Image 1 (cartoon, rainbow, N blue to C red):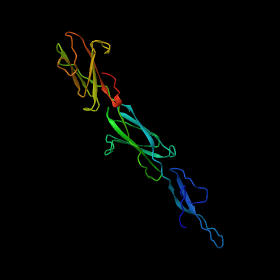
Image 2 (image 1 turned 45 degrees about the horizontal axis):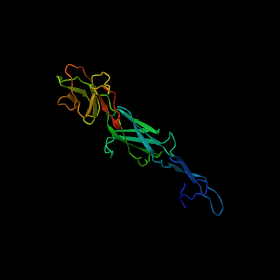
Image 3 (image 1 turned 135 degrees about the vertical axis):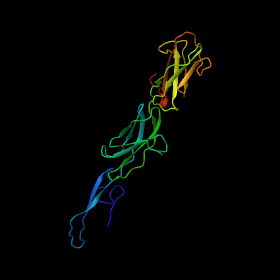
Image 4 (image 1 turned 30 degrees about the vertical axis):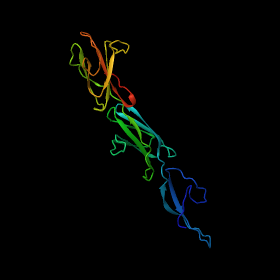
Length: 239
């Protein structure tokens, strides 16, 4: 024959029955005269790399208000020698790749992301010959919510007031805000006048006719705070 297959499906009787993943192999061949037994010199016929295996068990997690992390199992790929391309998108179909990262590690972190936003992430491996594997399973994560920005209380009268804030970089509209009002500066839920509510807006009316039902006492000091509700229900620090 003028060809031969090496590896688990091959028929080479030289002990090479299992090749390593994503490894470069070099080949040479010589001929033997069947009548005289004279052996030729070896001829180098090139090199190639076995394929890499696709990354497995990807896991994503929020890192900060502007970053998401991803890690994966490299399987039998050589550690530190296999290239991985991790991709992040706001689209589950990855119609648009928002950020990508190429690394030799088994993890990647995506930075400069919008706060309180859901992202889809996946990863593939590439072998020494630039042949890519299929993608891993797609996993979902999101950035943490940033604390809302301060804005002054407005429309104060004897029975109601309006709390205001800014999105402060959070996805808006799309972020849920949790508001609290109390006569206690610590916004203590045990306080008898504690009241709370949620909204997708950047303001809320407490009191008579407002979105948060509570009876306000005239000439009384009230304290208000607002949190952003982030990915997986995690709240930001309050403003």
